[in-house]
Image (cartoon, rainbow, N blue to C red):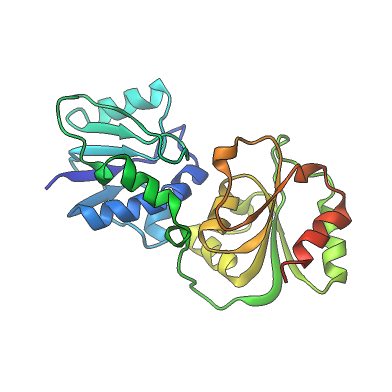
Length: 246
């Protein structure tokens, strides 16, 4: 039986890519005897804890640039490499060192569609009880996804009786992915913009809203409510949207 390795330690593979690939990793684990990965996220979230060792097939959470592909080829010269196109349901691409070998992963495209087509596949188990009417706000630090009125929104929510935790960079607040998972589980709601942390809250089944800017459609979450043009909303409108979920 082939050894499958999910490689994430590449420049072009971000936190969001790894999170979105979790349903596919679960399918791989069900189908193959040995699935490996270098992902600290998968290890700490108890998804996959086998280090990479002489894999037959490399599965990449996205299709990286040529520099990353070259790294993978040099690191695993005997492995067949498959790259899944970034969060585009049903679309895929691959790079094979030996294209004559049959495609083994996920029964090809249909299984990949299934992985991204069912909401229950995205929900991680809850580790700790939820604190009612608590909200985790991720204040995007990147200029592209920045919302300028977080402080005002926070004040509106305080008046509505919400317990609030603000974050800019999650790594400034939590030592590892395990403590971050506990923080996500603790809070009933998520409020933020697009990014890796949004995908984490989404796959953990959180309720909440995402202020959407000009990020491509394919990156949208499954469980969280997306507010189109949300980065342009006034603070009281953002607070009102979240209040309707409680």
